[in-house]
Image 1 (cartoon, rainbow, N blue to C red):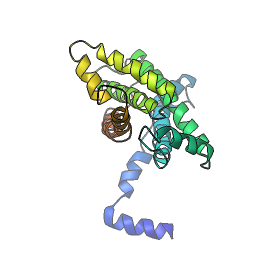
Image 2 (image 1 turned 120 degrees about the horizontal axis):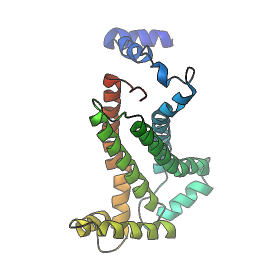
Image 3 (image 1 turned 180 degrees about the vertical axis):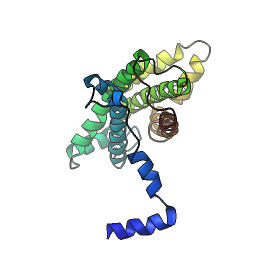
Image 4 (image 1 turned 30 degrees about the vertical axis):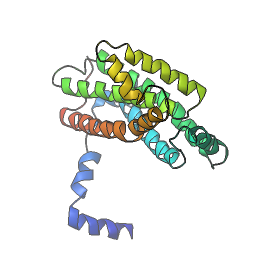
Length: 223
């Protein structure tokens, strides 16, 4: 049955060449751990993407129960952890995954730097990669406030003061993030919108560009 459905779709959209192009793409020998043990460092990027996918999927699950207002936010997280089946596990995956993805991105960035993979003709991909890094940091920052507990509240206040210390644009940046004169309902709403809608959209665009450039330029070799 699956074969019949696939053939029906393939006759109309010709999808076979698309996935064959991906499946038949030759992996360079220097990034194959079967040939070189040191090649595992070239897996950091793929592992980062894998964790990112887990973050997206677990985040989608969490949004079905999370209530983004200052009255119900903490209670909704507590309900998720204590009443929802596997809720504690999924939130734990999302919570620890947020830290792990930053660690993996850092390792991936170090690999790219020390192997000279940022050099011509891959400068644009290096820039896109750094933008992805900053978006990931933004996702971690905006997600930290969402549980609306004491730790999240005061950590966000510190973050906003750091933003306020930026020369010239500091006060404007703080007000834009805070949404008012205090850390309150507007702040939580803005952080939720950034975390769930705006930053993931930017991340998706950057990832598509990142993968297209990797596909066209190939994986750089060792120094």
